[in-house]
Image 1 (cartoon, rainbow, N blue to C red):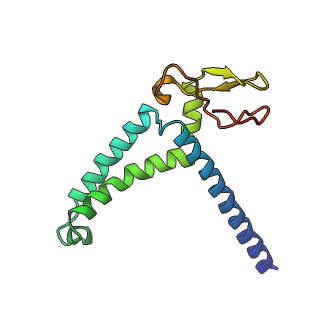
Image 2 (tube, one colour):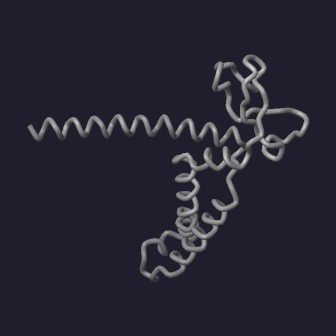
Image 3 (cartoon, one colour):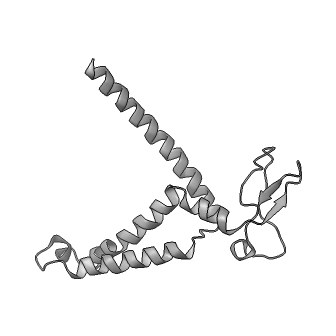
Length: 145
């Protein structure tokens, strides 16, 4: 009986992993669509992570394996914590929530007329065109540019 329960939990974990991969792909697509925008506090957290990573590398003993691998390995280890901070923020939806809270400008969908979020001019690059944050309208499903 316990073996069946264990197999059920294992299959739920596999399903959860598949759903997390799909969600991560969606968040990464949104991150690319917003031109890799981050709020300033995430950069501050990543900077703090870089300071902590550099401190950890410099505090490692002389006979540590990271000291034997050369300077590139030490730099990569120092950059690991900021990379983890950025990935965690993007893959867990923080970038999407911060973007929605920071930029509340909208334009109407050309098909259904419902409002849709637009990218700010600093992110889209040109002040004369309007670029939607979503690739399609949330109401009618029409492809937005």
